[in-house]
Image 1 (spheres, rainbow, N blue to C red):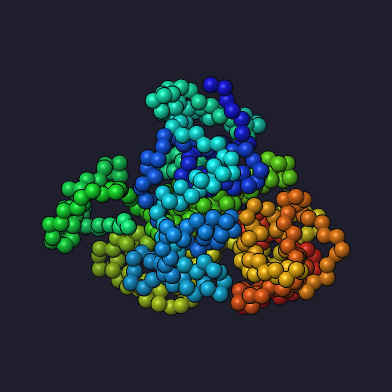
Image 2 (image 1 turned 180 degrees about the vertical axis):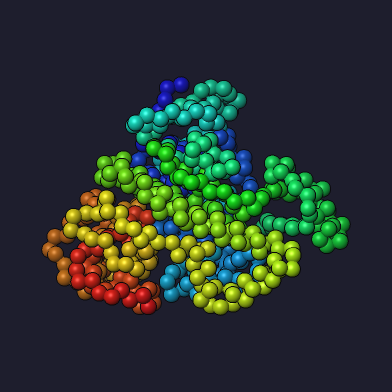
Length: 470
């Protein structure tokens, strides 16, 4: 079969791979997604089942959040290591509308992303097992065989300027990027010294025996939707890029599935990488820009692995000293400042990118002051000159740069878009809820540039003042 050429080939049609494909299409690129599953198999499995606050902001920015409410349940708290004291997300209210987690099965998330990808024109090929990868100075070609009966053993090839592996912890992407070696959910934790390989299937008999051990009741489970064995193994890729090849999501990191952090971190990786590849392929940024993907996201994944490791120790406490640590941690979470700090980390709100992306800084713009550079752009209300009030996130629908002209500043007659037709000009006459949100938009700046992934990038030179963090 003749090879087809695209700007980017993504291997893996899970939630992270599909969301990345959507971001790449918003950036104006041609995209093919290659998936080994032949249809809907595996979609009934609910692995990650929670979207945290920063992911919800991201969905709102792309106009996807409205598709979730009927299929999800909001929670203003979240657990940490299943301690008695919970993380209180409601305290984030002054800073975000998404001061909660959303409980939603992963297969529904995947279906929503699949539908959006198809609407955007992503080419999705299912039933292909990737078996080879060949790279040149200008492209990457993947080869594989079709798994469908109609085309079994028929060879498949696709070529992209870049390749992204989004096919999970058992990724087929080159080894030098691999991670080093009405329904209800029921989790059963029965103490045992036995070691069972993760690959061994879970049986109903095993589940029923665990219930007998824990409760003493001979209760017969039947008709399960999914039986899944997981481990608390922690692994992290040392690199996210090798030449024209990148990895995202579970291909980068594996850890205890504590509250869907793997999915949420993976979605933010896709958000970070998509626009950067778009800028480079369109020729509007140097090839060094995607290198910052690893610089910005690897530390976040390290933090996630670290906190899930800590939760694992709390989760599986069995000795006196371990239970004492649980009690001490529970007391710590009763301190509001500690509770909020940990909640900001788990929810993704604590992430910032303080190192300026100098390689894409337009003429006439400067990095932002310390404490503001790389912070997420809060979704504040913007009153335009015609009196209409719009949330800033609504200007983020198409993943363009946002050039925000701040209230009370003298404007030029002709404002030049910093990134041409990839720029949305937003003139703010007023920000009605600024005092209720962290007022980092104040301080003497005339204009601010917001990155396509929703983080503050550059400011128009003016007299910088002390940034009020309210």
